[in-house]
Length: 505
RNA sequence: GGCGGCGUAGCUCAGUUGGUCAGAGCACACGGCUCAUAAUCGUGGGGUCGCCGGUUCGAGUCCGGCCGCCGCUACCA
Image (cartoon, rainbow, N blue to C red):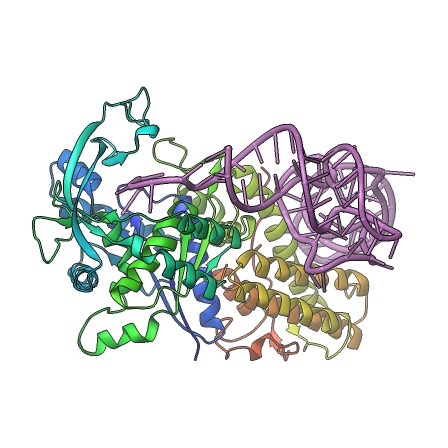
């Protein structure tokens, strides 16, 4: 059975969950749901990143310990994902003991292998940013470009990861795995960075203590990024003894990392190199997505332009929000998010096309077939046209591109609407012609429910139920359900209220 | 500056290896229908495929130049 281990980045708890986080998480969820539906064994991981100076400082400002602070913040993400009906199998927090152990094992192994060495780092440091700047990044010669604060020269004795030693191996890995990083433009970006020459990177800090202690030198903690990346290993039992440890072999390296374009370097350069240094394979797949923009700008805490998933769900419903995130912005591109845009797509795709099709079919089945759905016809226009479109949708989902899967599903909806218009069963007397027309439409709806179920599980299940089918879409066995002719008829069809009431504005 | 990408109908974008490639969806206009959530169906776009030149029997599709926009160019969640 094929295995699909999908991850989102772990989100930094100091930010509030917004639609940008939701975008990535919903995409990962849809892919996870699709793979489950086709019978793959799936493990879907998300979580929160909780170490680092910003968290420590925020906790201090609120007069609580860092642990108390993160205990307060992490649930906001878990709750946001519950609201969005995210089907993650695990939710990892980097402050958990299991993670501390995995980080220490993983980086300890790299140290034992000789890829981590002690050295001195000197640089221009902004205390507010908690980061070093290169001289040419500074404003007025000596001020931080973000805060305008005068930077200090700081010298720290740190442990360095010998990234420079992995340049050739990384290039070889990229060339041997041309599809490991997608889209291609992002792969090229990472590869050209690597080819431009790699420097060693400092991976520990002595200036803070809110982090995972370095096992061989407890005056240091690991810099938050090197701790964070390891979460992908922690959750599947890296380095553990016993039964849970065995799961690591099961899921690694068949992992599918979904990440935003701002963290390419960490995932596409440092992370594969660290895996190599620790003696495990680099991740099999890294899929890079773009940003959701508001008014042309990235959503961020500092710009106060964040939209929260909860607001949109309250307004449009969870499935409409999920659909919009998946359909409107192709993975890999940036997208503009606006209420106007959501309303437009909601009306066109969900209310007019899909919702209305469900309603009109149910009504005519009620008036012409006494409310009992006729079986799918073996031939006819839909029988000829739809299978190819189903294949197209399947291909889109299989490529990890939900917008393509959904786009093809909507072609099925259009075909079904057009065919109804052609035959006009509402004008005809009950009989074979009416039965075939409505049976075809019901079969199209059955297939559409299957194809959209990763995006809109609730809606898909409701369509399934209304057309008289038992269970939920996808539980009838992988693949088979996607063939034309699965709707056997003879079951009650229910009209029900509008699935997606049309919006006025 | 260097490397990479982009510029196709009002909008968002598809367009494999050059020859029905000038397209889709949305929006808009007109017509049909009235089963349906005033939904749906059909028809319509005369778009210099950023500009100039070249290769070719033939180029959004290859080559050169130019203009405009964007990304990356290291320790920024």
